[in-house]
Amino acid sequence: MSGKEKSKGAGRPRSADKDAAILQAALALLASHGYTRLTLDQVAALAGVSKSTVFLRWKTKADLLTAALESVRMADAPPLSGDVRADLVAILNDFAATVERVRGMALIGTCLAEEAHTPELLAMLRERTVLPRRALLRGVLERAQGEGLIRYDMDTETAVSALLGPFYADYLAGPGRRPCWAEDAVELVLAGLRPLES
Image: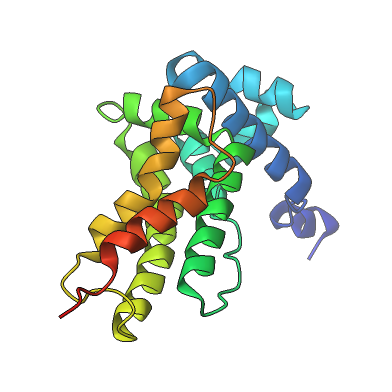
C-alpha cells in the first residue's frame, strides 16, 4: 500500500479543545443573541476557529445547537447524605449553580421561544438537564416516603415542582435568587408533606 493510500483514510483526530470551545461559544451566543440572530460565523469568531472547522463538525445551526445543549449535562450530583432536608437543599443549590454557570434562564427562554420552529432544542434541554434534576429530587422524596418521613398520599411530582418553582419565580420577580431560597423552599414543602397525626 502506498503512502498516498495510507494517508487517504487516516484523518487528523478532532481536537477536543476546539470542540469544547465551539460548543461553549454556541451556548453563550444562544443565550445572548437567541436562535434566529445567531450565526455560525459568530460562533467561529467567538470560539477562535475558522468557519470551516465548525462545518466539519456540524452542518447546520440546529445540529450545532442541539449538540451544545447536549453538552450542558447536569453538574455531578452532590453526594447524598441520607438526611432528607440536607439532600434536597444540596440538590437545589447545585441546580441553581448550574443554571447560573451556563446562563440557563436565557437558554430556557430561547428554547421555549423556538419550540414551534426548532422543537429539538427544548426536547434536548428537557432530556439532558430538566428531567435528570427532577429525578434526583423525586428519588429523595420517594426514599423519605418509604421511611415514613413524609405522607404516602402526596404526589412526588407535584412536590418536585414546588421545590423548583421558587427559583424561577424569584428570577422573574428580580433582581435574582434569594440567598436562602433553597432552604426556604425545602422547609415549606416538607411542612406540607409531614405525616398527618392520627
